[in-house]
Image: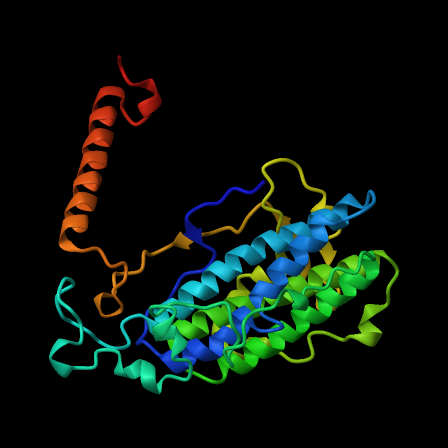
Amino acid sequence: MFYHVQNLINPIVDDQPDPSAANALQEGLGGQFGEMRTMMQFLFQSFNFRGDGIPYLDLIQGIGIEEISHVELITKTISRLLDGAPEYHGDKFETPGKGGKATLEVGKEAQNPHHFIMGAQGALPVDAAGNPWSGSYVHNHGNLVLDLMDNLVLEATGRLQKCRIYQMSDNKTLRATVSFLIARDEAHQMAFAKALETLGVDWNKALPVPKFDASKFPEVKKLMDAGIHREQYHFRLDSSQMEKIFSGKSPIDDGTELVTLKEPRESYPNPIAPERPEEFAPGLDPEMQAMADALSEFKEKTLKDMTRKAGSDPSKRKE
């Protein structure tokens, strides 16, 4: 089973809406080498894992769990890049577009109009060409060495593509997220390479990674200077054997050390997306809005009353 915290693994940086940048980033989400594939591939490999190689299971599953947070981060980033692009400032309860004004005209010119027609200015499970994400992308060979090699190629290719996306836009919202994913992809490369080394596989002759220095990107260098490209997290509430693999010197022998942690050292606020009246989202009419507001007020009042009676722990309230 899984638990979650309503925080992001990396902050969303503010900048202007940029639908074109949002569409480029769709490749990093729903493309063949995007975050949806890494999440599903590693989780399916862990769910189908056979044998008693528990450290390898813990490694694959820990990275798969992290990839859930990457899918969350990249979808939030795409939504932020799209959100407010039409610059509609009308009243939320009026009918947007009345009087002949095309409040979503930008959607007609966007590289992916489905962002405005289907997604209400939100991310979609597609690649940059609009092709739906496919489960056929997921490789689960049932052979540990093959799975680890496949995972290493997947992370290396995903990192390469994100470096290309980085160079397609100087939008700060896009670059902050892509830079974080570049650094974390390198950490995952090191994890699978280290696992292959423990199995006697001389992976470096067949697949030398990284082939280029991503620290030339200033946002990536800042993250690498903080060492997040040499950390891996297991996210376990019980014990994990990941550290038996992810520890010691880096597989690329650059003088750095691998560190296993329970979770990232920091997390960041997960902002709620604003309503978009021009998309009729979420579409509450005045009567439903009044009911929702009354419920929120009731919940706040109840919590305050419980806190007043029992202090900060409502479970100790006085009867």
